[in-house]
Amino acid sequence: MKRHRFQRTAAILGLFLSTALTGCTHDPVGVDAQPMVCYTTEVKPIILNNCAKSGCHAGGHQIDFSSDAGIVRYVVPFKPEQSSLYTATTSTWIQPMPPSPNPALTQTQRTTIALWILQGANTSCGS
Image 1 (cartoon, rainbow, N blue to C red):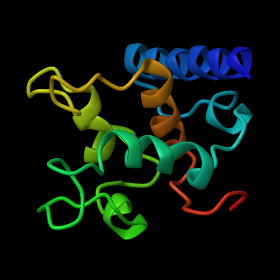
Image 2: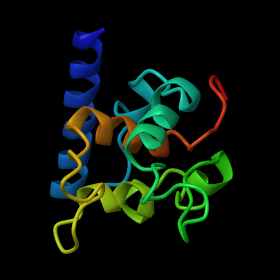
Image 3: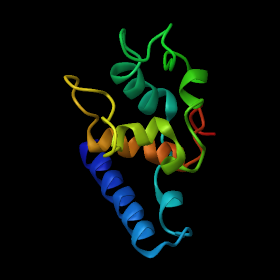
Image 4: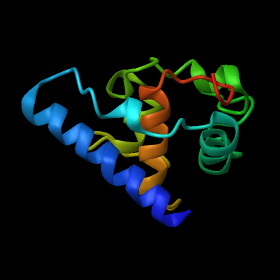
């Protein structure tokens, strides 16, 4: 399982770098070649365990990630670079989320979210 996640992380990082360096928006091997990310078992647990906590983005907060609707509100399907759910975890010009003293999301977690968004941000597996 760790090898699978590492390969996915390496592949998506390569996709981002090649797109950033060449400016090309078409990659016939990239996202479509990756296994589908399951929102329910892969993305949602990352958000619930790192963002939708008391004092952060739980119920009652202006930005509420405690529900699927609250999460997808901050996602632009197919465009992680325009999705604040993703960009807030990678920003260098504001304090990245989650804020200190909480641990930052791992590269694998950020890659999983980015790949899910690139694949259309479906909230059900297999869609």
